[in-house]
Image (cartoon, rainbow, N blue to C red; front, side, top):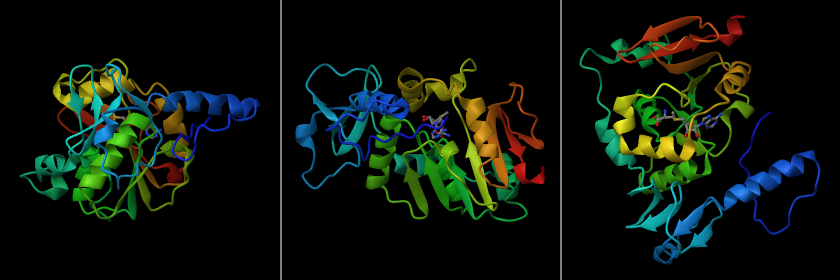
Length: 263
Ligand SMILES: C[S@@+](CC[C@H](N)C(=O)[O-])C[C@H]1O[C@@H](n2cnc3c(N)ncnc32)[C@H](O)[C@@H]1O
């Protein structure tokens, strides 16, 4: 089943009718209240968010949003965190051995030809998206979690990135073209990457978003999305299922490459 976050266009005025689909809509309406906004009095008057929120003056809870110092921030349980794409871009460096030696470049199939678009099915902090954008690709990025999407939306408001489109939807409910490459980096349940968890954003993911427990079903749908290549980032020691066409190993992660149109 595909899950579409509909809260962006949904104003909670009239409850949906009670049929099978409606129960899910009610669930999403309840999730809207997760988007609590603290300190909304400091919002610039011209700022129009593409999502709804409920104002709160209570103590913030993990994963709730606030607007401070000109940026939308999420509370990770201890501090307020914004995504800073300018800073992320600064941290992206080309490999000293050259572009063609990078495992991700090889996995995306860019040595032979550049994809029409790279679909980042799991945008998260936007770090991998920007890395792939930095290789010269057009990006269509998906983020389904409302809080993470809100942070990304605000980060893109502050730093405009050309040829970079962000959507708040489940990527596996979309159809793509045969010359698109899909990149999929779900959050795994048991394998905690200590190094990446040290990054403050990753703590927020662990505490407020959690593991992507439906990743097998999502991958199954991505493989049927019409795209010519799906690249899955996995911890190097994790068994790959289903078996990929081939795999490119980095130091701590591997990129499993699936070529669904080859049959
Ligand atoms: C491990 S994080 C991705 C990290 C990302 N590669 C980065 O550089 O920060 C996984 C993210 O993908 C999102 N996600 C998982 N499955 C998704 C799907 N089917 N469609 C859209 N977003 C998804 C989760 O909400 C979470 O924010």
